[in-house]
Length: 349
Image 1 (tube, helix red, strand yellow):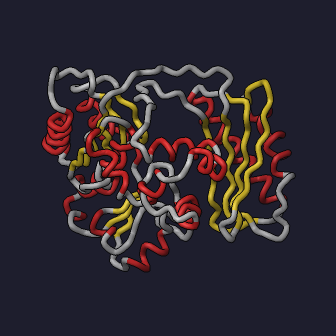
Image 2 (spheres, rainbow, N blue to C red):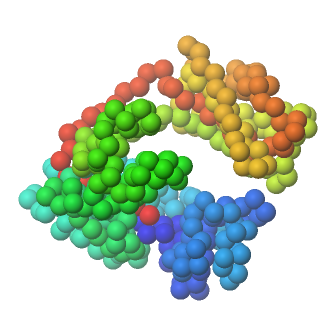
Image 3 (tube, one colour):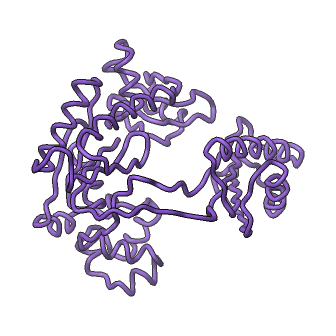
């Protein structure tokens, strides 16, 4: 979906159409969740601080998030998807993979199917979606970014290697800013240069991810679309209006985060054997500490002592804390449904 949260707000409030808006918490520590395309022209983007967004775009209109409404619209979008296939893997509230190699419409070309889906989203929901069509997840996801907003791009097997050769390394799935900088130092700026690296060298530098980069540069991605996605973790985090470094304040905040974490675990019916603490300091540096045991973490009385133990390993005496997060991961039993995949559609923001 294109600028999903912002698009829903503009659809439901005509006065916002054509104006630069951003969805998120409008406070001193607020972060932009989604920006409309009018705001993006000023350089505003998701994960940017609201303060910076307003500097870039002084006329920016901030809208508080309404996740219940966005979720309801997302379900309507997925109802349209399900008219074509049941093999749908949601990646987020506004992004999903569809395996259309076996579908409900018979022998219809994947591009035609993507066009029909996009048309129905526009007609029924008054929203736009962009689609990428290809033979695997990696290429479908990359293709979905190419003609945004309200566009479609397809990459055939015959075109894949030439397309990847000129693809900037920053646009590879899984290559973040830090990895891109490291690759640039290695002389890797596009897919062709990545393809020229040996598997041994890539795994030496990037570990397991090296194999993924090696395969992606050759158009290889054998991961199936997984309609049943097993939850890997449950977590929550709090960003404080004022940085804290007094022990009493840290303990109080940690307690509240544990309470919220337990509520989320109960709501999602999730349990895991690893507890992870994340601490972000005032200068945006961050550290994590984790502990794993054989029994899953459950209630407050169980989690709080371990959370305190992890926090005791963090020295914040000279660096005030901006954010604390806790998560439970590593479920004791993990079941995955595997599906063989030949064709993909990717719809995303």
